[in-house]
Image (cartoon, rainbow, N blue to C red):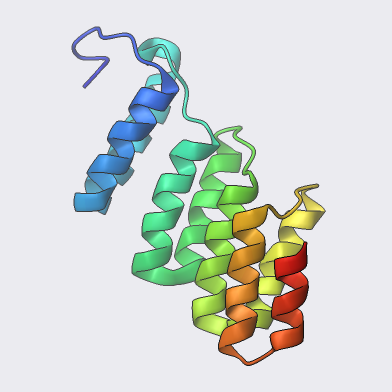
Length: 144
C-alpha cells in the first residue's frame, strides 16, 4: 500500500499497522509482510525483528511453537536477527504444548544466539514451571 501510494514509511509505523492487521486477519498480515520484504527499500523502511515477532505471536496462538518457528526462520532468511522477544514467543508456545522443559529448550536456543532472558522471558518460564508445580524453578526464574 505504501509503495503503491508513494508514501515514505518508518518501520515502527508499518509494524504498528501490521500488528493491527494481524489481530483481525493473520493471513493478510502474512501476505503484507511478504510484500514488504519483496519491495526491498522502496517503502523507505525494512522489516525488523518486531515485524517478525508480530507474526510469530499470531502463529504461536494459532498453530503453536512449530508454526511460530517458521517466522524465526523467515526472519533469518530476510537477514533479520531474532531478538529475545522472538524467543519469548516461542517459549510461551512451547510451554503451552510441551510444558516447562520444552520452554527451557527454547531458552537454550536463545542462549546459543547470545540472547539473555529479560523480565518477560523470566516470567513466562516461571509461569510454565508453576503450571507443573515446579515451584523452586519458578522462584528461581522470578528472582533473576
